Image (cartoon, rainbow, N blue to C red; front, side):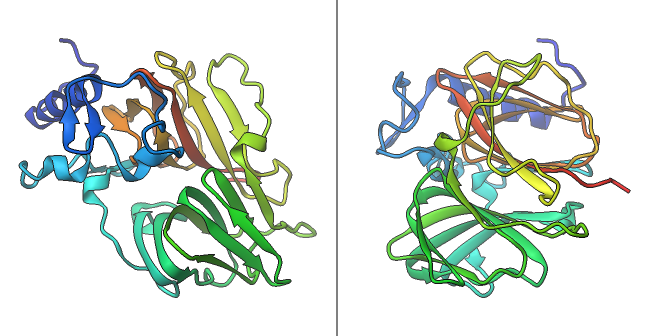
Length: 306
């Protein structure tokens, strides 16, 4: 077998464990079974994105491999996988545990975290001048703004909250959110507004030279200093452009599985995996398996890099 770069014994071990798991197994109540399903990725659970919180290669499947993790942290990228998530109470939130996946300690200018809300839970506010984006991957939450207007956010729904906007997110049962926050890069005479929406209501956009399907969840106008993309790949599809650019990315694979190139490393990834990409790290993705891949991608936009 030929690899694009010399492969350490550690990577060989990872590939020998991960790739057979992706290709030959699926999840049942008792653990792994040998017959993969041809059904939609969420048919067994009744909702989309269920594998974000119930990944094929779950943390419990690695209990017999002490010290093993698929997570990797390098100077210009990181792969954060579910078995290495560390949850603790989120500051200012009630009855909510959070796992920070990306923070400025890595070199990013934003944070990305999972928020596991339990019964009678409520969000806190982000720090001063910090904007927030929330996306629901499991359960239902209620967003309330300063005017006491309520919005029910279900799976695949999202909200953008401008900096210094009073709001709260509450949950009566349980829910999982992926949250992005960053200090707003203001422009004179430009302001952002609260946005509430869902992926399915966003139009497909043209992607010249590419085969994936693209939706953008936020306006592309100047006031907004980042956007969130939803990108869909059918099995066997891949990025044609081997991207190297100034933008940072934070990614959560919502559905499917594939191979992600980051720098000179090639990583098998599955739903539930998160990735940080620093500026100018070479990046490329190919979808594997029998169902589509869908990922959610943070990208900074509309600001001069100087």
